[in-house]
Length: 294
Image (cartoon, rainbow, N blue to C red; front, side, top):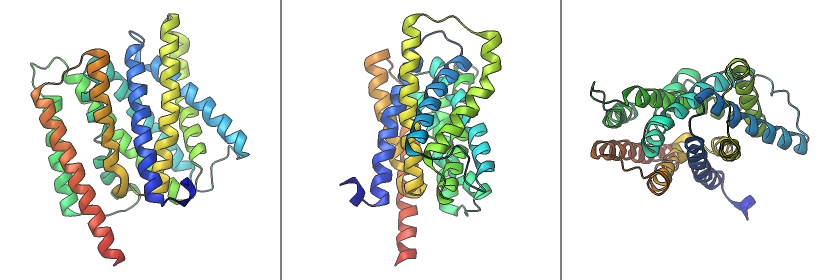
């Protein structure tokens, strides 16, 4: 049945599945408690690395990147790691839904990075949507000296920017025919290698329940990475990115029932503005694509 689906339908299913997985990852990361951010990122990617390695070996695929994709692997990994660190830091400081919403600025940044790396032109209406979405993000960040979470919100916003750059690289590698399993493995291995020195000198003792929480975070992260990679290798961002905002709904529900999070009015205004721009851009992009194919 799945084989008979269109690539767009597969992309939608994969991106919603990734939203569920990443909500689970964020929840378990926050449940792990007072573990340093870098340590959380390390164990999140360590589990994903072993899953990706197993998947590669089972499929009989080489660990060597496809010709011409190495620079995109490196960019995706460096930018993506920075984004994960920003997201995890924000998760420890602000509401789950706020952190998730700021991370969901990534599709807007993907347009900007696509213009830089893939030479895709940003149209005037898309630029307007990006600008208004930034305004929506300001309602969540609340850039005033009275906001004690200003730093965390700003870091979370920057994490969303980095995620947009990373997903642009994933899309480019998908176009070039690179394996999704290899993309996940390279990113996870890169992250583990880069953070290892920090862990050697600054390891924070963890209780058994914290090990369990980070193990679950890693499992969810692996599912999320495989799903998001499959989504963007099956379909372009303009066709599926709006469905990624389902994570905000999942995060709001989970945050309320697990942590008792209740976002303030300004955050809800920000959610509405960003989601409205995402929907508008989704409709505009698909309308343009349909006109070209007519």
